[in-house]
Image (cartoon, rainbow over all chains, first blue to last red; front, side):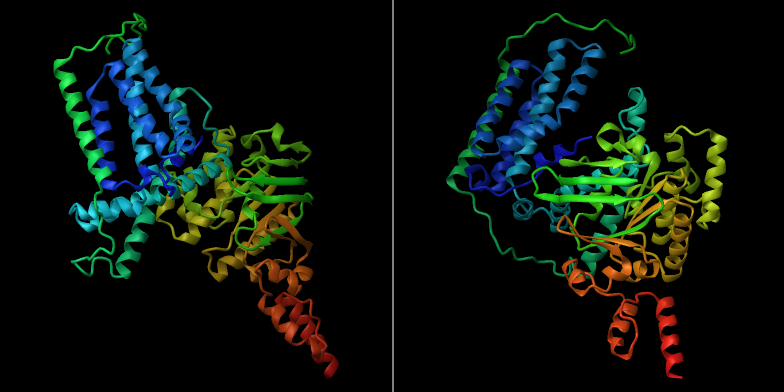
Length: 261
Length: 273
């Protein structure tokens, strides 16, 4: 089992316009792409939404990491396609749902690759999200690589006890993950309790009025990105309601194996 | 026998953790792998059961190259107890936890019952058989993790930092247990920073530093070699330090454990009397 999927969500500081963008503008852009991807089931629309991201990935100089996260998510993408197709969806619809998943993964991967957890925390705080909530969120993001390391150790420990993750039929393979998930969840809960105790011991929340050291300020390019995102979402809504999109018709469909679906 | 030849290993995108290790650990030997944090100790033992494959060089377990086997097959002979028990415990009861690996290895249910009962008894865990492993103390969970590996009776046993979280009496029991395992002909390999524990066990020590073996000698030699200990960020055990201070009074400097020190002091006193 590869945990490289998490690498695509790891922040690395680079001097690029995407990294230097205001995190709020970047978040709005991400949510814009997210909303547009969820809006359409048409494969042409989803291809366009996916392609919109490519220049942004290029500008962020994170091609390799982005491609790595795409490769890591390939198995899940194939699973989504197969499940849709097997349970009676057409070939094109199954492909569209897979593309939607890939687009969502890509956009969030891009956001986390180019936004430091500190910036994210600042953005949340300065949009008046309560500090405890923003701290919880940024700490969760920060702990993703740690959890990935933990997951790898748990996998190693269980493989050393004779567990073969890829053995057995589909249901058995899913059951094989129980010995991985339970220790991971338990250690995450233990870690969170210890972290909460450590924070409280160091006076977390003692002062209700926090004064940020760095105040985020949107620049002209950030306003431009927000404007373009609003325009894109408006256009998507207009197209969704008023523009009949061409339909790709490939009449391939699985015979019904499960008639109740 | 576990052999490594020119073993090198690097995690993806990182510099080499192991930079050419040549070792032979014979059947029935008792070995402690020591070294500073990040020396490559855990990485080294993970190559012994095939969890990690060498970037170059090779690892052989009883003549089989790890490249030609699987973790599941190698684990039957090489039992690895991880440092943190929370990374492996998941069952509802301690009994089920211990049965897990036996089921993976395809044992019959009556054999499983027998083996589980026996190991629970050996490690003083019988009273916890029906308890959830998650409600036990850290030291007890560590013992469950140890039992969960010993239950299938592997030929070579590797313990990663077995003394962490154990009180002094448990450490003593663990030491006696390890000595028993060694006496039964098992290869026992421990990774430890605990110089006091290792000094009392007096195994062969393989000292690692920055991915290289910088010392491979009996415990008395390594734990009294100031220069080597310095390179591996270790210190002499307390008895060793005391005997070092008293060396000018005719006491043997290469003494590291309580029993030998007692004998040496009694001899010296006898001579004076």
